[in-house]
Length: 149
Image 1 (cartoon, rainbow, N blue to C red):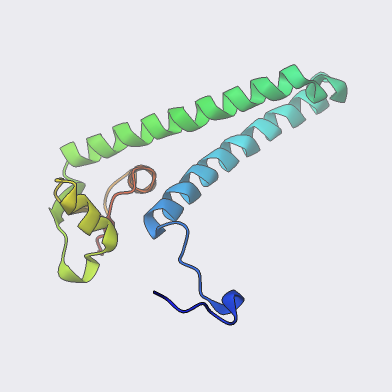
Image 2 (image 1 turned 90 degrees about the vertical axis):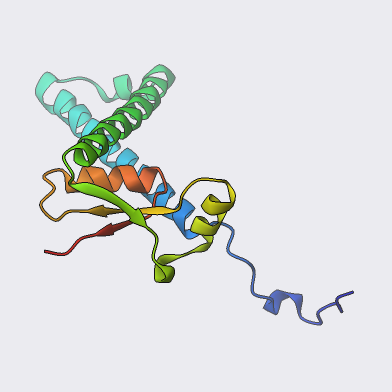
């Protein structure tokens, strides 16, 4: 039995999320924020160019519509990034390799226990759509490395 701590507030808490999960959430937030910025630009153009009133954009229906459009935009970008990744694999800009011992993390241990092969994806520096391939890998929580020139 563990002895109770005199100063429990000095205990260092365990991280609530794994690094791969945090990386995935950051990728989703980046994608959503870029889509939201584009929508704000469209709204600004509608106000300035077409003379729409601000009250139009303050209704609950409009806000729900924007939330749905934002969700659709994130899902569409995710699908585009996935198609780009599959194309990069087909054209050999992205290759799979076994995980080396220095990159063997808790995530790869969990993948190995789950029965999936722990592989890392190497992305060529000449890949024409490298940012979208990286986005797909971050969204799908896959290990990857960027090849050097």
